[in-house]
Image (cartoon, rainbow, N blue to C red; front, side, top):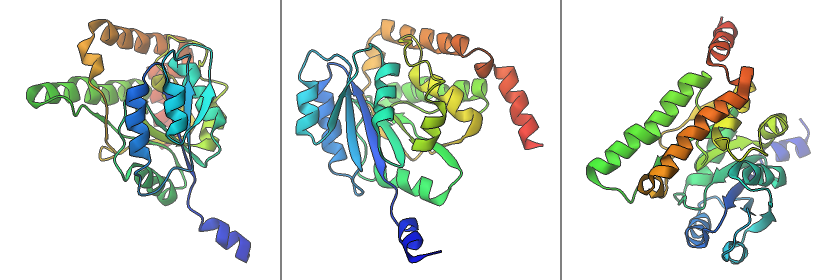
Length: 254
């Protein structure tokens, strides 16, 4: 190994952070403030403005982020546009209502530096606004259920869209497969369908990020999320077939 190779090998991974947003300026302000306090600063922050009518784009610029405009409506299109624009070695994803702890970027970087075979790492959301039994029920029947049920369907852990990171080269391998132009797909599930076929996804339950409890205040929103989950499995076709995926996994492990 040459001296230049050795110096390159010791360089820390560059972590790009992507945040899709639509009309959520105040939550975005808090999210960007938390990113400004990271023990390891992000290489870049990309806010994807998906047709906001409020001042989300201005908040992004004032918070030190680059703004990418994505006119195609829907989180799948917005998130994909952000991933396409990222220049880092690792692409991390938050939602506007995510509040990453100060060591969030550092913990993500350590995962990928320690395991060259790791394709993606994800963690849960924490509903810090809820208290007592409401918080326990939300964690059990929403967050834990997502990882267990979707994980069982896909034969590997899914990524959680408000809190995950993937290698840039892993995204490049699946970017033409995801249904970015279908606003009815569950974007993190859709990404997981294709990402998990060739890349190892790790669930780190200590990589937790506080998120808004807004979904529990709107029954229609909860129903829409469930509808999109089943739609995602349908449009995934053979790639999302639970039987096929478990069979392929068993073959690989023999």
